Image (cartoon, rainbow, N blue to C red; front, top):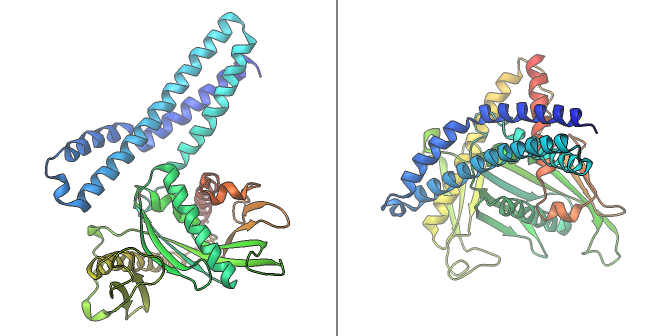
Length: 373
């Protein structure tokens, strides 16, 4: 590629990065950083642990966003300098370095651009993720546990804190269900494209005849409620049951009636929480999950009203959306976006960004098509 073509690419990248900086409002991010640093340095911050965790989480996120934007700007400026050096010395080797840097920058800026597509009402929220084994018996339960580990590893790769609310273990292996939160800004907008039915095809490790088995697990992603949401739940609309936790647990978890099951009588929604040591802690966590489910129900009802007036081609999140094939070949493929990889081991270890980015772009295209219609 010629120097002029590289120069055009750098100009295009510069324009894209300026647009990202404007949409994410880097000046506002810097102001937020100063404000959050003042709050984080308050001597009484940890008197309220929930508030302290919220402040430190937001500060970590803002610092990360600023570092990414400033890092990309610095790399782009450095590449321009390298480009000028290559032209001045007519050095093909340096020009090759410029090409390699442009390739890396293009990938990084494309990834950052995806963040600008998260503009939904609840996209900036933390995420509540629920996973349930579906058809496939013990293989489905094992698959549900594989998916839970996959998302927790994804969060760990990004430095996002998580909190497990509930794990219901199956009798032979794996999980019947699990619920956990990803505590990072925009976690809901980012992970919401993972909602739907996931399908696994493999030689079953639980079949002594070594037959191929297809199993399914459902993933639901909800926005975590905030105090401003005003999801009021009258006490007479909730039935509270307490019982002894099951499965692996530490001191007190399996020895007292600390697990809590909440049933929202008007809707039939059932929420359980058993991972805390005390009944009060489990009840508080279960209430947060119930509020998130009711918030999502409200959002879906509002969306359904809008959909009466237009043809929404987005499809149902309950439909099958991704296949993980381990036999007779190795592939993970998203059935909506057509994005795929031949490395399922990496995907199950949390390498999900390619799928998530493709899903966010696909969703935006669906929304734009629906709006135009």
